[in-house]
Structure formats: structure tokens, C-alpha cells
Image 1 (cartoon, rainbow, N blue to C red):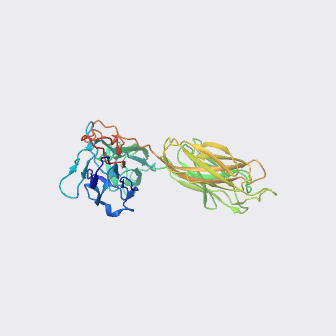
Image 2 (image 1 turned 135 degrees about the vertical axis):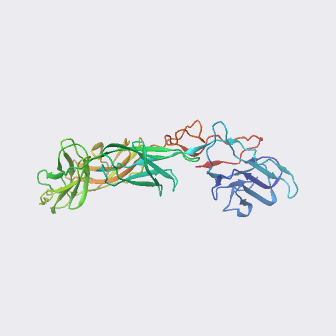
Image 3 (image 1 turned 45 degrees about the horizontal axis):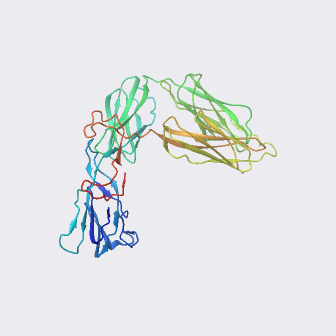
Length: 440
């Protein structure tokens, strides 16, 4: 709100709808010749109710000009298209007593409120047998706690899970075999857009037992890359194998059609070592575990310098977003390159400069991804590796709904409450709106 008349102001009230929640300590105001004031610097001049924020000064201030701003969090229901919510108005008292007033509480512009966009990340369930109980797990982005996520199997309702701290789950025991489409849906509300996600599970009548073993290529040596190959029986694509060295996870790889899965391993100590493998199972085939005979890792080549590497934590992002992957190699004079991988997929390779290698990554699949960095030396240095995890979520899309108060398909869209689409300029009554910014 800005008033540029040349008279004294004693009180200013900035009215807003009650669904706009004032952000504490966001109000700012300034009279002619004065400093910008706030709740912290001039608490005696400021007060607020559920209807308005107020500036008051018993001695009056010169309005040439006077301005006041405040920020709000939008808690309003979405508005109908081509209509809006009145943003409020300004009431001004120019005299200590009496009714010498200007403005009114509805002089502000009409604003449109959209729903807040949501998304669901549905983690891939295991493939069960008939009557085997499994758990569906969903990460719910922007979905309020206590909201319900409904689940269906081939279109038939099977239950729902309440959202708590951004997560919802449901246990389910299938009664029939076959490929089943599981759909998780958060239905659109007055304030939040709807969203959904699907996963396929294969229900087997009775699973077949499996076996897995692992082969270690050559004689592993400290600071050098060795290849580990797991073989699953019966052969077939599907499932993953987790590789471990003395109980510590090396990584996880997908099983190919020939039943094999491979991973590189860089030992860092010349000790007695056991390589274990754990097969996750696949549709119709049970999980299993195996191990290679214990062996002693050979010492590093004489004169080769030991190295270590750390991989920076990866910020959570959405599918299609741009993420920087940064590996730091020690010592900083180590020469070579770092190859970054997302599971079996190679993201790319970067040259190490002053101990740092960085590459840009655009994830194409949602889920919790394991990022691995492998340092390949070009001089007399040890190879080394590092791992971290990245959570990749589905995109959140603002809803474009022809009738946001009566959706015909509440589970099909995604959306965004909290953006106020109209700028707050001159109101219908001719005065300037009092809202400088509106938070979501």
C-alpha cells in the first residue's frame, strides 16, 4: 500500500482474506523522512488480527509518501476460472478521532488461486506368490499429512494408506496369479492437485527355488580393479544381485537374460576376503545367496601411491532435472579420470583437475538411485571408488483444470496451490493493493 497525499496519517489497516496467513515479521513500512520500520524495530506501531495488519502512531506521520508491505502464506481454496478472490483493501485514518477515513476493505484486485501441485513416487514392490503379503510404499510430495493415498489392483480398490511425514504404505496379499497393475492415487482437493503412479507386479502360483554363485577374476590386488561375476540358476532376466566384500556392500547390479550380473571392485587392504552375493529373486523365482571361496588380496605394487575419494551428496531432484556430480580425489596431485555410473548405466567420465572431477547428470528415471564413482589413475596411483544415493522424484505439474471445484477425474492431474496468478496492481476502488508478495 502506498499513500502519497500530503497529510498526517494516524492509523492504516491493510485488510486481507482470512485464508491469507500473515508471515511473522514480514511487515515493513516507511513514512516521509523516516527509516524503513519493522516489527523488530518499531513493535509499538504494529499490530495484527485475522482480518488485517495495522500501523498506528498516536502523533501521526507525514504521508508524502507512506508505504507498507506484508507477506502472506496462501491457505485459500482454489478459485473458479474467470473469477477470483478479493485481495482485500486499505483503510486509512487521517485524524486522531472522528471518521476522517479513506479507502475500504474490498478495494483490492481479484486474484486467482491455483492448487498446490503434488506427485507420488511409488517404489517398486517385490513380486509375490499367491497369498504372500507384501507392502506398497509411496513417497508423497506436497501431500498434507493425514491425507489418504488409495490403491487399486487392476482397477479394483484394495485399500488406502494415510500420509505421514510424506510417506504412505499399504500391505496386500494377492489371491490370484498373473501380472497385476497396482495404482496409487491421491485425489484432488480444494487446495491440492491430484496425482497418481503405477507399478506392475507379477504374482506367481508357487515360486521356483534359485541358486547364485560368484566368480572373482584373477587375483585381486590393492588399488586395482577386479571384476566380480554372479551367476543365477535358473537363468533369466530380472531381479538384482548385491555384491559384498567381508560384509560391506560393493554395489548392486541387474541380472541379465543369461543369468549373470557383473560389477567392478577395488580392494583397499591386503587381507583375507570373502565375496558374498545376494539374489533378490524375480517373478516366479525365490531369492538366494552364495559366496566365493575366501582368498587373500595381494599387496599393492611397490611405489604406487594410495588414494581415496569422496562423492558429494546428491541433491534430490525431479526426473529431467539437472544435477552436478562431484568427486574429490586425494591426494590432489593424483592424475586420471572418474567414471560415474547410475546402476549399470554409465553417466559419463570426467578428468580429475586439482583433485576434483565434476559432471552434469540429467536423471531419466525416478526412484532411489545408487551413484558410483570410480577413479581410474593415469599415473602411479591406486584406483579407488565411492558411492552415494540420490532420490529422483516425478515431476510436479501445476493443474490446468477447467473446473477446479468439481473435477471429473480427481486422480488424473497434478497441481499447484499457492501461486497468485494476477499481479497486485491498482484495485477496483482506485487504490493500490497492500500486498507486496504472497508466499506459497
